[in-house]
Every structure is written in structure tokens, then in C-alpha cells.
Length: 115
Image (cartoon, rainbow, N blue to C red):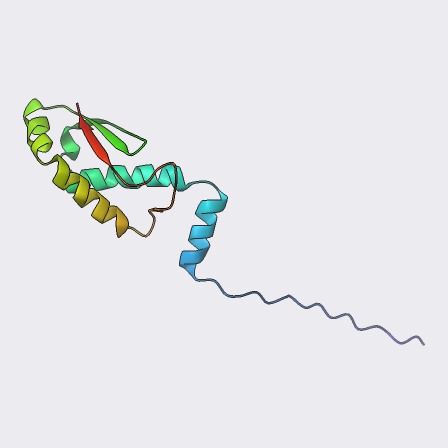
């Protein structure tokens, strides 16, 4: 009788990654960072401004957040808080684990235009 060859299958061990690293890699590999950042900016607007019920349209491009508000009174109040709102939103975004600040397309809010 022939001697049987033993086959052994080994799975190579890789370094263990944390869930944070896995999620970051997934977001980068699927190219979801820009869309996710935009949604996080809109959520920061809703939370920091308190004007979510009055917000009709939102648009973000090149560091400028364009907001259309349904009430001229609310728009006027927000206009006087513009710099403070930008700072609050950027502070909230910097603490958000899903916001990737190194994204060249969609980064921090630099300007706010109220319509």
C-alpha cells in the first residue's frame, strides 16, 4: 500500500484590526467618504442651528454650506449667529467618528450662506 500524503491546510494569520479600522477601510475602499461627510454636515446643521423645522434645502460645495430657510425671521436670527454656528458645527464634526477630516472633496465648513 502506498503511503497517503497528509494534506494540511493552514489559514495565514493576519493582524487583528479594530472595528474602527475596518469601518475606515470600508468607507475608503467603497469611496463613501464624500457622501457620508455631506450627510454628517447636514446633521450638524440640524443639531447646532435648531432650525431643522425651517430648513427647506441644503447644499454643500467647496467648504460652503448653502441653506434655504422658510422664515425670514429665522434667517435673520441665524445670520447674526453665523460665525458661532460655523464653529459649533466644525467642533461637532471633529468629534464625529464617521466624519473623515482628511477628505479633499468634502471637509470642514468654511462659510455659511443663508437664503
